[in-house]
Image (cartoon, rainbow, N blue to C red; front, side, top):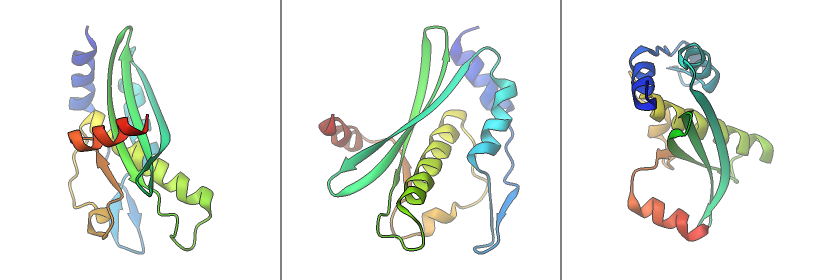
Length: 147
């Protein structure tokens, strides 16, 4: 079976309910561990890898995460970015980077697995975007300029 067929089977069979509740903002969510727990039994010989790196675009610092699934020589991946708000109060520098990394990893993996969003993402209500799935040539051009 080819990677595309296996990935399609995973996408059709994975179920990751939003069972966690943010008590402050009163919304349901899933985290990266929830997704990984659900996908591991479905991998069927495929290898899943998630990496991230820090990117500087203009004056803004981002974490870019890559979710990658492979089967032998075949490989498919998705990327997502999350802004690191270095001026955010109440968190250490390590927590700011860790938070952005977790968000970008979760977003890139959700994109790879086609996890639907049965409710509005509370982060979309913020004034500054936290993460976007790589989808435009402008983003690719900006990132290529850094390399």
